[in-house]
Image 1 (cartoon, rainbow, N blue to C red):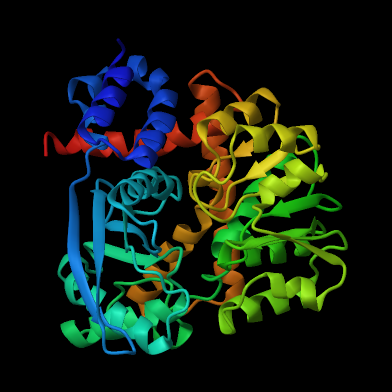
Image 2: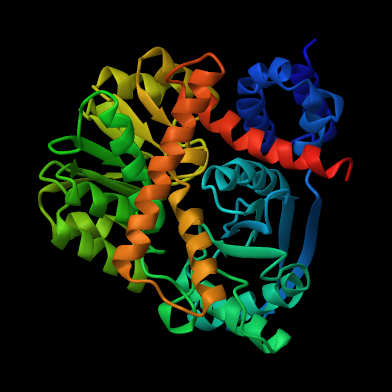
Length: 452
């Protein structure tokens, strides 16, 4: 049995029931096989065994009171996975599905994503099984303050800098940072994704979606194609999906879908700037459900209880590019087969691990340009890194400066993926390229530190 296979089996044995973490480790480590021969020093110092074990995993009780005065109890967590190249960095997710296995998978992926940005950031992730949906602002505030009462002990601008993720937007970041500032009596760059008024960065809300489109544009250019005129399918209707649609529109493409946990919208006329403004108001201000879009725009069809990729499969919807931007494992093998059959030749992942392992194999066997999440959606954390730099300088960059830096970083990530894939014998394999490029940088730093 190879070193890689042994590590994968050990992870499964030591972390029972953590399916998403097992999946993430398998996806990364299997592509690292070429590094074993090229870097015997990694084998000797057990880098492969060490990188799958988090530095620490913290879980804690979060008691809070709802508007009826009833005490509620949730479980919070923070997994600080690896800080070899910089302070821990990664989002916080508030969703009923949150468990330790999901947070570990996200933190593990974050190691390599952050490495690819070229910025000095380690990998971490955190969150809670709290559901902000349907809660009042005061309930969300009380929960966020209770969550921060424990989390503040474990974070700091040079230690661990959380950000947002699913269920954690500007409102939640504001409540958490306000309470952190109160507890610590200091104004520091400890949370990113803040509003401009108290230390945020221009382009940060747009960054993940913009970055996924920039990465797709770089992949398309390798086949002398551009975004103009392409039909795009986007899943989700949150921050990532919204700004993916906006950037696709800027580049001349047409997005025809959005979704939420209740159903999917298909609008064959395309989602233009006016329709996108409706979606942003619906989701960010009114916190409504996406079915309201169909009531507003008669060109749209609403598929109740259906995910985007199931609709694509069942309705035979044609597409050129896919931007999965909702959640992990939203695309399975059957969905991927239908996507390829219906004309899809480019997938750029805005969500974290939205395609399962079988779906990825279908993309690759179908000659689809496949941008894995750790590369394609790294624009969000990259711009968080730029936000940290601005906070350190006590200086704000212009919108144009931040966007130019984001575009440059995404182009550099693309170059790293292409270069590593070719250097390790699998030209054009973005998955292998992203994993190896991200891993080698971290592994060299870990090796340099000795056994710590």
